[in-house]
Image 1 (cartoon, rainbow over the protein chains, first blue to last red):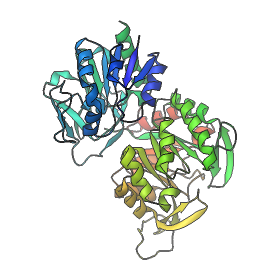
Image 2: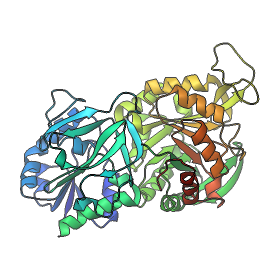
Image 3: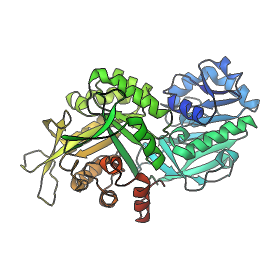
Length: 201
Length: 270
């Protein structure tokens, strides 16, 4: 089994690497699109602005899409979830991957931006990636924008921060979180374990 | 709704191999508490929402010891880690981020060169920069100071640097506000009057800063019981409470504190 973490030059991959390693995922960091082809599962992390993430990620785009269509389990985290959408208010004009219809919008005025800290989930769909997770379990968020899918049925979980915020989406072999499972204690590790298990099955 | 965070703080003396956690009383006397990554691991298991490491020796040659402490900790501790002490350039911040830190805290170096805050936040984001302030009450009122009412009378708060050894003449509340405009994403606010005293947080100070800035404020200094945490969460908008001795010396563990707060209506992560 090989889990690869896509390193497209946006930030520190230590935490996600350590957390996947801790749950027995035996991760590998890859810096080239060719590295994705031998993978059994793919993790797309992400920090920074939507536009700069997309410009760095673009060279992986066709390889990611091919692997997604082949049905490989994929996990997007934070901006790695936002880039799945078509576009973002953060970087007007920058095209996202567009695998999920809809756009990424800014958190409303009047709440703390970025949302930084632990917030509870409201589970909308009990997908396998949320096995062992209950309504109200808390996860660690750091973000100023969130995804608004056109098709609400892709939403797996939400959280509340001034508005109802998309916290996790699930579509076919793809699962993505706005929060950081690698920084969310035992519950976060449980999600990563679920991801590792989905690859073994 | 965001939970109020409980954050243990590890003051690290890196002058011995592997480092050790110590705790000062009113910024002076020192008590030995344990090995940094072992304590961090224990606090993580106990439910810490985040862990702060402060290098109280803060000398250049000891930064390697700190990065090895963080590397070791981040292999088995999966909550945010904040690291501070003697970081005075983006290059030094990078070493600490690369070791696995999520946030760095700056204090003296930012007072001496405020642009450091924007340099680090431009590169790593506001959420990665915590401004630490050590504030002391001054009852001699002066023109242009941010005056706060306390039970002992009106006062202003002066920033200290070099670990409480020197004073700056800078108004702590004004500095907090300026630091946020420079890109600080969080304020770690320590009351020098309360630190190590076990008298509880400085409520007027915490309340005033939390009211002034839009970023999270971490209350620090003086916590000796869950009641003190309850008080700061009920009376101020502090996002987090930081404590050291109460956890180090076995008086309370984090899980008990959180249960106590939860039963009294504070939103914490259980």
